[in-house]
Image (cartoon, rainbow, N blue to C red; front, side, top):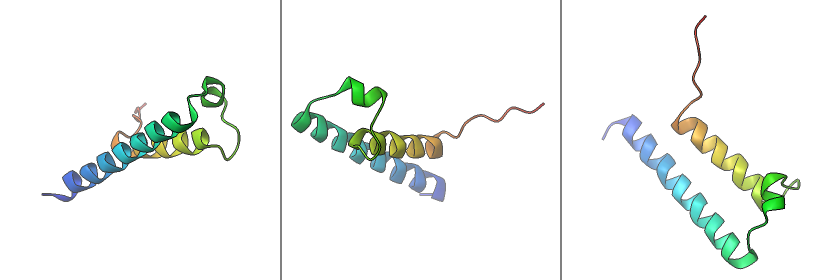
Amino acid sequence: MDAVSQESNELSAKRIALQNTFKTHTDENGFSYEEWVNPPAGSFYEGYKKELAEIDNQMAPPLQYQS
């Protein structure tokens, strides 16, 4: 397995683990749309969205347009 595939697999595993954490959190605490849209500092939703964005940016970096 090459390094790119291994990194992709590791990122996928992190993303799945993060999604499982989200599922567990919402099973135990319910889902708060208000906190999802505007998460308080230090809240579960803030940390979740930040970590998810970091993983997503590594898996699919933003496009860079040439002028």
